[in-house]
Length: 560
Image 1 (cartoon, rainbow, N blue to C red):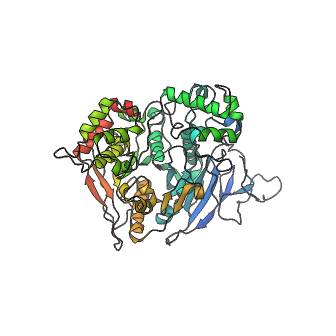
Image 2: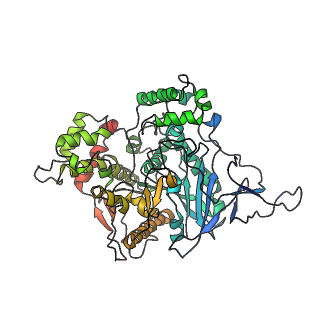
């Protein structure tokens, strides 16, 4: 294991040459001994939480550093044999993986670490359920530092929480035949899987139950959750039993020609001969950073990697064919996801041509015939009986349903067809207050749910504080935050968000293919200790639109 920047504290064995050592301890904080390594964490009680302290262990390596010859290769397991005599300081976060925009000295290639929160009294044998968070960020930025899970554990002292750092952008998703021949594809997704497999081997030492793991993520993290569910076409069991996918953030999957063109450009930017993986592996981090910054966002992202690969086909096709792992599932989206990705402001949508031009700029592979069919499904405001008051209403509804709304409905529906009972759907209709005050037309925009689930987190995509800031809640925000965390952690613990829900919260009905009901999470007024959360039926018109977007001929064009 590479100790690198981590401080080491030495424990003393009982006697020289002793076969075993005394229980390791540290003046820094509580110690968890994994045998091959031991870590000292810290304890804290989040502001306003009084029902239990939380122990945090950060920057725990789950794989060998992906450096040198391991660059662009699948993560390699650590040497987990032997008996350690030292305790590693694990009181802080590890470095984020290199982001885009990239800057030398900010972020690191040596970033394959995870973070663990547990109740202070949890220990080996406690067998608590485990929830694992996979951050979003378009597969090119983001870090667990923006998603602290203290409140999840303090509010529900019956679970363990983990977050995983994984390779991003060029270092995580460089593709093409040269990489396939002398490396591995989709190594960022393989990093996530390696972290989940580490959890299977070692979470018992922290008091967790490896047989009761839930994965959770939003946007690219939600897409990652879906990809983990469909990994290997369902031919290998996943190291988890439940999944929460929020605002599933797929962009069009790159074609083979696009992947190869991106590879050739990257090689050129680095200054290597064509197809020279050895040159790419020996290139300076400065050259890699330059190539990252000269490549547009989205060109380094998950790709189809063949029948025996991690992602053997488009997720939509794997789901449609039933080639996925059956899991308990929560799937949902923010009601303003489409507003975030409509392609323009309300004033820019005056005519139907504006809808056609702006919305579908994100989906260049969609044919004119498919666009024409879509526009008929979303009738113009001047059509009698149209549910859309303006062209902007029409545009953002379409932009949201193309993927964010319809993919969660699609997977929920397919899971129910496989007789999975614990399936739940939601829509999030409470805006991120800070973002809303800046752009009210966005409503409950993309990432609004994260604001409430992670302590007032605001994604700013800057280098300060790992790209995030935090804002104190007002009264009604605090109530909704506690309600949502209770639902989420209840599902992780029991497969049922109602099991440990807040006593004032409504029951969350299961998603049934015959009724298509979901929970709509809504903030209450500022002086009310209740939210306005309620269940709602998914309209037949929305279902018909989702059936269109998830049909095989359309997903062949959207490449989701």
